[in-house]
Every structure is written in C-alpha cells, then in structure tokens.
Image 1 (tube, rainbow, N blue to C red):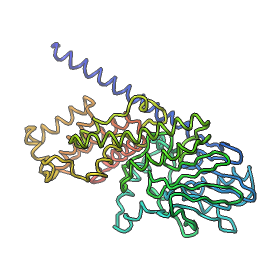
Image 2: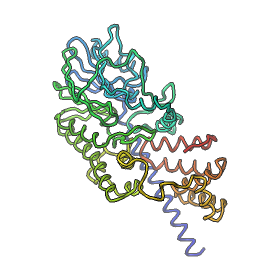
Image 3: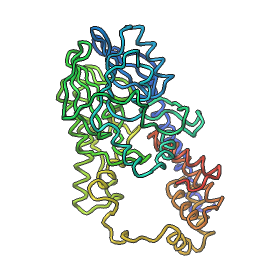
Image 4: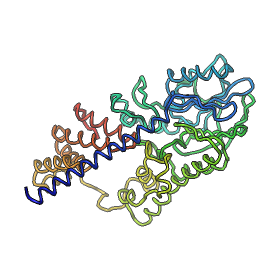
Length: 453
C-alpha cells in the first residue's frame, strides 16, 4: 500500500467517524428538545394555566370572576378536547373570550371545541389572516407541498423526532392549516398599537407585535405579570424565514416587538410553543437575549450588504456572538440564523444578489450540460458525485446530482445519490424543519416523485 493510499484511507475513516459523531450529537440534541413537549398543565401565576404538549402549540387559560379567557386554542380538535377536559378539572366556568396571538392554524384550529352555547368574544389583530391573503388572491397552492415537507407529514413516525418547537403530530388532512370556519372567526379587533380589554373581571392589554406574522400580537396580564408572546418567542432560534415559503417577515420589527415585551417586567413568559419561562430575572434575560439575536441578524446583515456582499457570502459573514449562540433557547431547532440573513437581504434588495453574472444566468439544464462537459462527460460527472457521496461530502454530492438531474430528470442513479446525500445531511442536522425537508425529498426521490427539489 502506498503512503498516499494509506493517507487517503485514514482521511476517509476520520471523516466518517466525525460525520457519525456529528449525526449522533444532532440527533441527541434534537431528541432532548422533546422534553419541552411533555403533556402537562403548568400554573404560571394565580388563575393562569398553560397546556403544554397536548397540541402542537400552547393553549393558555386565565380564570376570571364568571368565566375564563383563552389565549390560542391549539390546532386539532382531538388535542383541544384533551385540553378542555384538563381545564375543566380546574374550573367549570364558561369561555368568555378567546384571543388569537396570530392567524396560523396551529393556534386557531382547536377553537370549535371551546365554543359554548353563548359565543365568546374572539379577539385578534385587525390584519388577521394577512399572511395567507396573497396566496389566496394569487391562486398559489404549492406552499402546501413545501409545508408538508417542512413538517414531516409524509414521513413515517420512526423518521420524525419532533418539529423543533412542537411534538410530532399527523393532521387528518395533510399540510399546514391557516384558516378556520366562520364560527371561529374573530369578532373583535385590535386596530391600533394596543387595546385594553376587560372580560370576566380579567384586565388584559393586547399589543400589536409584528414578527413571525404581520398580524401578531402579545397579551399582557398585569395582575399576574404574565406575558403571552405567541410565536414571537419559543425555545429555539426564531423562524425568521419559513422554508415552506412565506411572505416577508420583518426582522427589524420583530426585534422591536421583543423590546416592547422585555419592557413589561413579566414574571412568566408563555411562548407560542415549548415550556414557559418563569421568574422575573429569567424572563428579562431570555427576552433580552432573544431580541439581541434578532437585532444582530438584521444589523450585521445590513452591514454586510453595505460592503457589497451577496447572500451566499453573508451567511458566512454573519455569525451570532458566542454569548448568544450557546444559549439553549437560541439553538436552531426550528428557525436558523442563515435563513434570517437571507430574508433580511431579500426584504431590502429582492432576488438579485448584485453579481452582474447573475442578471441572466444560464438555465439549469444549459449550465449542467457545460458542467458535464467540463468534468469530461456525464459519466465522469456521475463518478464525481459517487466519490463525493462516499467521502461524506454530502452537500457537494447533492449539488452534483442536481446537475445530472437537470440534464436528465429520469437519471435513476442521480436520484439515488441525491436521496442518500440528503439522508446523510438530515442525520447531521439539528434543525427539525430542514431535517424533515431533507428526509421527505429523499423519500420522494426514492419513490420516483418528479421535481423533488
């Protein structure tokens, strides 16, 4: 055996061992996150209880004089029934009001379960439903395909750990849900920056809080000093951009909303998902760190843009400071800093990255044909993809497979290479949505589904 061959074997063994260790670490870290989804009713203050883990989102109950106020309702009826049963063990007072922190269906879908003989007030921001409105107006439906991939709805249970900020659930109808029936539509609206209301003797402040959605609001319960943040906070790096595809999420405004929440001096912070944060000091620290992380992504990206950096360069340039990156509630279980960087760039400058070469790039097939020629032919390109896969250079293997599939979308070997590369990438990925997306597309490729990008 030559010294060169021996060195190559050693390098491959080290790379394989490192990759396996990374995969174990990612899987272990994401598995530990499932501790956030244990089914339980948590009392966060006098007369304030939060149902965690029953649904994919938290449902909160504030007990008043002659009724209760709910903040969000979960996603599916079966889970909402379980929550209602647990809440009735605490009080049998009727639901007098429901407050939607935003219009995503995982927070509104359970509402029918909580409707009594007398319809409760249903509060929301005046822009309720604004995220989905452009899709409906434009006739867009493909986000449902991407949403199912992101959520892992097409994966078998053994391939799903959790959804980063939510337990594994399978809706009866696939895809994400972002609408409700007429009976559960909002009846009362927050039209300005804030609205003070009193229901069942409970005084609340509803505050406009654009962030994950433009129709977001947070709920402040001054008597208990409890802050209900909706999806502007959960124990993960925030989802500044959803890979299912979404209208722009304004990162700058998200940071401003977090600042307003931090100013409330709450002793309990209830996020849209995961366990509440308890204790005044802890809440202040968490909200400050969360705000700082979001603000940093915005400001550092703008700094890089002003240096002329492209999105691909910016994701290397913008790295969270260690003091933030190491916090357990800022790990990228659901959102990812890289996606935040890209969405900031796109929100300000649109699709064009500034590189003149990319004004009119070659179509994928034309570029792939030239890549194959450069490699010495399609067979050589295929061989290069196989070598990359064998060396666990999985991102490169997937990209080479994309060139082969652009030339011939029925190339079975290229499909298998890409499927295997995506599967390996998934096992090294702590971000649940990326992991689900990788595994779902790999499954589609193996089953022969076309255009699995």
